[in-house]
Image (cartoon, rainbow, N blue to C red; front, side, top):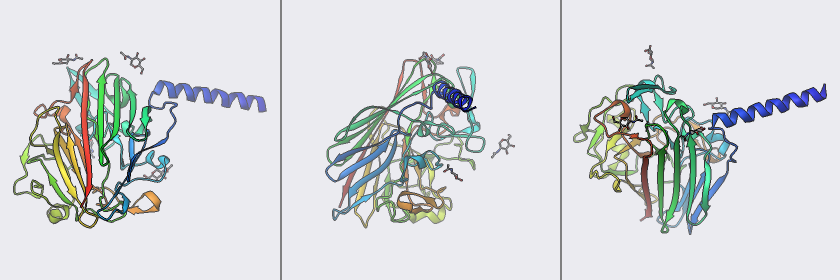
Length: 358
Ligand SMILES: *[C@@H]1O[C@H](CO)[C@@H](O)[C@H](O)[C@H]1NC(C)=O
Ligand SMILES: *[C@@H]1O[C@H](CO)[C@@H](O)[C@H](O)[C@H]1NC(C)=O
Ligand SMILES: *[C@@H]1O[C@H](CO)[C@@H](O)[C@H](O)[C@H]1NC(C)=O
Ligand SMILES: *[C@@H]1O[C@H](CO)[C@@H](O)[C@H](O)[C@H]1NC(C)=O
């Protein structure tokens, strides 16, 4: 009896192991926490979802604070709907109707946001274990992930890498690449950190001053799917071309901001300045550059009493996201810049964050 029990659990273990191998997204990689550090500036990451767990930096008086929302344990990142700190994909943002047609073939994706697919599906790149390819505490960490043909419905094998890099004493760069191995596929990767420059427990982000270098947005319907239009922000609450506080026009937008901006000064493959955010009490300032054509500005409208680090409860509007990326639902809008990567081609997306305090 005892022997039979042992062997059946052994068989179960083997089956589980085989399933894990076949499924591909459940690798045997260990999940760990890694730190990049230079002086007072430090960033903690995990290979689960290539997540940024914390960014600690001084305010104008030298006081250190963690300026990103997150959880205490990696376990909590496995069951979140917030996507705190993760790199999301294969296609970030929403795909309307969870489907698209490419070269005459219709692809059905896994819907996880009503009838739509959000951030790559229920088990997107923010919910898989990446491999740590190389790591040096004072310079960089490179994560890789092999996405398989049919994962969440997307076509073809895709070899993905993400390198977080410290530059100087106060800059963090992120270089994302994804090579299509055997089929054409859409790719749109985005970094989904929620920032609060006053410190992650300092309350809402209304008093943050924002300048966003996008004079157009891609408006959305009630399900947050783009209508396909590209509209000017002039005379609307979306206009942050000149710096202003995020809270200044919230009354005109009862649901907060959750919209893609078309970045100006577009020059594909070159870095352009996307945004500057400053919090006045701490004096901390974040400048963001990107090679991507758009940035999703999100004010954590859907965050509701989320228990985070140290048991702190994050309320609605406790953080802001500046997710540089291609335009949402591009696969279904031929007038948006294409996100299709053909076999042998490599998608590239670079971001640079510069932090100062004054
Ligand atoms: C996962 O999150 C849901 C709420 O989103 C919660 O009800 C559930 O208890 C969580 N499960 C675990 C294992 O933490
Ligand atoms: C999803 O699609 C079905 C069938 O078209 C429709 O009845 C339903 O209302 C849709 N759900 C949402 C949330 O839009
Ligand atoms: C695609 O990935 C699968 C494993 O998921 C592998 O067996 C196959 O050889 C790969 N094909 C190519 C062309 O990379
Ligand atoms: C898909 O079509 C495009 C252009 O129509 C072509 O360049 C590309 O090679 C095709 N890809 C595949 C995998 O057939």
